[in-house]
Length: 288
Picture 1 (cartoon, rainbow, N blue to C red):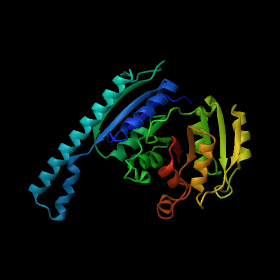
Picture 2 (spheres, rainbow, N blue to C red):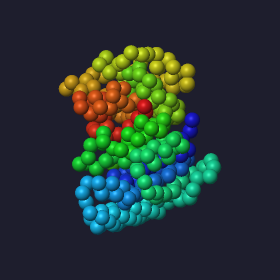
Picture 3 (cartoon, rainbow, N blue to C red):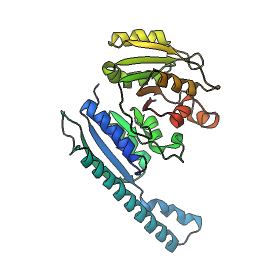
C-alpha cells in the first residue's frame, strides 16, 4: 500500500526540524501529506496536586505557569513549522484526495500526548517520531511507545540529523517473530521501490519461526530480490551487530519488529530494540 498520510508529532523545536525534514523527504517520495501535530499540555492536569497538601493558590499559580509555558512552546513549534515549509516551498493545506506533490498542514490540540498521538496514528500510514534530545533516552519516548503499542501502525524514528536519502537501500531485521513479520508488511512498498534490499539475520537473534531463506522466497513472490546477510554480535550486543551490518550495507532505512521480549525486560536487561533506539544514526521503522 502506498504511503499517503504521515503523522508527525512535534513536542519541541530541538529535534523537530530534523524530523520535519525526514517526514517531508518521505512525503516527496510518495506524494504524501504530512500532518504536523503539536499536543499542548493541559494545565488542568496539575489539579490532582490538591490532594498532595498544596493550597488552592499554589495550584492556581502552577496551572498559570503551565499554561504560559505550554503556549510559548506551541508558538515556537508553529513558527518552526511555518519557517521550514516556507524555506522549502512546501504546499500547505489540508489533504482531501490523491496528490501529485507533497503537502503539509499543522494542528495544535490540548490533551495527553500519548493518547492523542496513538489515536491519530491509527489513520496514518506512517508516524515519524522526532529523535529525543541528546540528554533523554529514546527508549522512554511516550509518543514512540504510544504508536507502537496502541495504534497498530508503523512508526519511524527520525535520526538526529536529516538523512541525505531514505528508502533506497532497505534492510530488514528478521528473527521469525510476529513483530518482524509486521515489519515486513510495513516495509513492502519501500522494498518494491528500493535499489537494494538485505535481510539481516543472526543465530543469537533468531527466534522460533521461519528463517531468512523462507523470508527471501516470500519476498521474491512480491518481486523483491533480497540479499541475506548473517551478522554477529559485537561486544556481546546483538543490537550493535545489527546496526553495524546495516551500516556496512549502506542502508538508509532499517525496518524491524519491536519488543519481541517484554518492554520491561528490555528496559532492565537491555535488548536489541533498546540498543537500536538509543544508538541508530539512520531512519528506523518499527512495528509491533
